[in-house]
Image 1 (cartoon, rainbow over the protein chains, first blue to last red):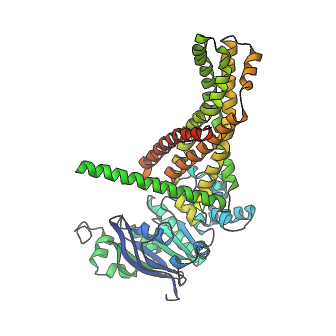
Image 2 (cartoon, rainbow over the protein chains, first blue to last red):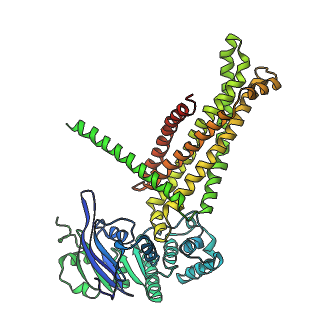
Image 3 (cartoon, helix red, strand yellow):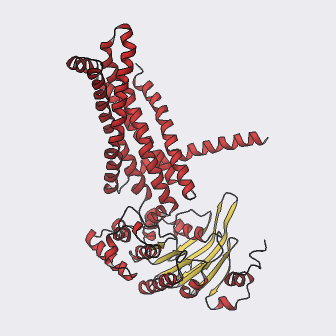
Length: 255
Length: 257
């Protein structure tokens, strides 16, 4: 049985692609309204871990407890209901280019609930305002927006259905430093406002310090260190040290 | 030794692809019966596949009908059988050339665009995003495309038949000096409903193949722009070959008596 107080409890998650063992044994847990950031180099399987939890990939082994229930052992309809409580901001925002901005934001509402179209549009516009975008862009299309605005729309879409857990896949990659701060601030604001649990993967250390309560480091398919964000600077774990300082020499590059 | 290893690897990959396509087909068909049905997506596809393909299919059909009349005249006039031209044009159009040429043109137009659109959605994570927004990707993306293609291809072929016969009529009457009334009479005299119907059955199955291949290759594309390009090529090549293969099989089944 899982501990009741964990919102999300991942145990012994493993996933391989052929001979490539991306995740060997990943275990971590997040409490309600907590923000965990997973750090790690490119290609260490951070995205794969999130995709396994969201059922976009099927894990080879492991247990995924959400509110104390194993997602992998649920009935199909229970699993669908559980999935409605997750939200995700994709790395490239992944907006649907055939739909207008408000339809993008309201997509989960229009397709997952019985809400009326006009009401969904009002919620979408309110969400757009939450992320600092004006009502005027609601009827434009994703191709007309800049990268930072797309990310914000993606964030509005991820929070539109009031999810209990939100995943952020490299939310600040490819943005200028000021836009990074804006997005990070919005993430904290939205998560606090919704009381949601947040799981972020990133390798942007400035961003980690802004949004994390706890940090876990993924390396070679395993969580090799985890702790509170304050402990990150004082740890003597050589991997974490090398990663946060961006040193060329260290255990990560000596392979 | 390496040579045989390569052949073996290719062969296994080929078998794996057949298996994957079969699974994809079964899964798509099962989702056709499962709610929800996305009407808006379906109507968009109807417009895209049916209405916007009309010019291409129409042009193909009219020139084919024209050249058929011209070529059969060259042959038939050598043994004074010119009166058979109208019958040859209408039977070739309805039974073979209408469905096959419309199918090939639509596969280039629609199969390619489906593969490119779904492929881009795959590599920009839009398909993943759909799943996270509690939407079944098969119901939302695949089913509307397949159903729309199966419905619109026969309609397109019906238009192609009519336009092709009209092309033959134009050449016969205005270039070869046939009497319009007699030509039209000859056109319909030996035409049976089964000739048109068999073409429509072919068209519906070609529509299914085009949408299936476009969706399969797009949905499973990998690795950025190059992957999307490959998916598009595979979609058009595989659906064109399957159309020609299926055409032979259906012809031998439908006209086996």
